[in-house]
Length: 197
Image 1 (cartoon, rainbow, N blue to C red):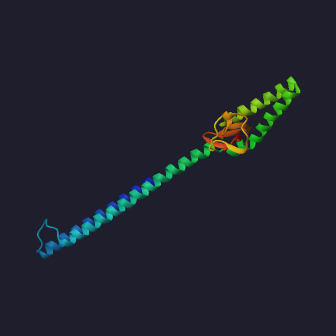
Image 2: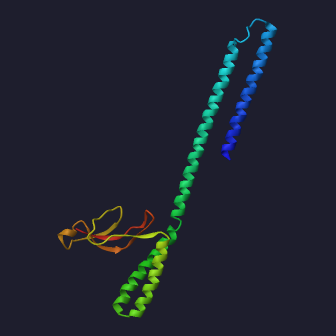
Image 3: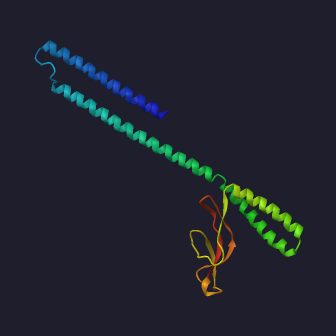
């Protein structure tokens, strides 16, 4: 739509400039024939200055048009990128609200496993897997960290430091207290870890 408007504006401006030039040429020719002093084919200083003014105005309008067009193209690219990002992370709030439920399922499975009731464990495990598969299908991924991994503040949150149980665990992750999750490339919940000191 804007392209059409800009094309029409520049076309109208060019046509107006041509019409003004034609009118001036006709006026100058009639003046030359009435005066008889100016030779045909040799433009006067006034004609050149008027022509130069029109070409300068035309150049300014073209420059203004190009800048406006470039600005509009940048706007289109920026908004389309924002829309794509919005679609990618539209589920983020809902998925973040579901993470504590997923954590509760993990804790429940550990406790039910201790009780020894196989049927109950199997039933809860089925529901847990169904919920987890649904969340994974919506783009949720678990941030993979385990004890012994090197600590990186960009991917994990240290909640405390304890004396390292062995020399290999100094400055490394001793325990993962809470799992972390990401949606696409963006981490929506950092894993909470304990560091060895």
